[in-house]
Amino acid sequence: MTEDTKLEQIVPAPPERGEVATRRFFLAAAGAAGLCYAGALAYPIYRYLASPEEMAMNATAVTEVTLKDAQKLPAGSVLMFKFGSAPAMLIHHTDGRWVAMTAVCTHLGCTVQYEPQADRIHCACHGGVYDSYSGANVSGPPPKPLKLYKASVNETGVEVSRT
Ligand code: FES
Image (cartoon, rainbow, N blue to C red):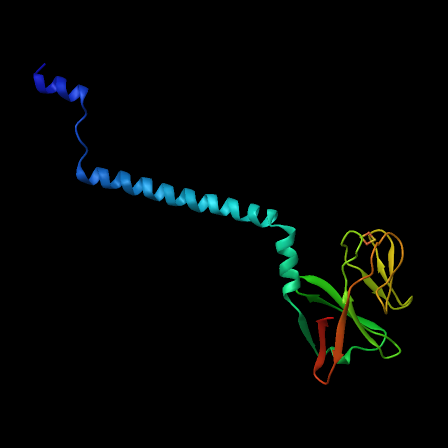
């Protein structure tokens, strides 16, 4: 065994120039893929944990909605729509009055329904009942009335805005 052979066994030969570049490329690609994977995992968690205040701010950011052709809604019927991110309803009563209000139950947040036969708003989750004109909580567990919106009817539609 020569002196050079002994030295090669203790200290490995330096890598060729192309071999180093390949290893660096692999590490960079693995790092980038890891970052993408971490981002793909973190974003849904962030959205899930988004604060209720932030979500409430987004919900109140919209102050007015135009419902095109809603003036054609027959009397005694309802139009469900989104006011921002929350469900809302526009009721055209048989006496000709228009009422717009949120459709989110004040008890636990279920979406309420207008029942034209009984002329009332009902929440199927726990049996809450609201007045279809004022949104007042009439019976059941809802602690507060439904929030009313301002409804302005014109020839092109109905504009609903926060009061
Ligand atoms: S959520 Fe509407 S009555 Fe409970």
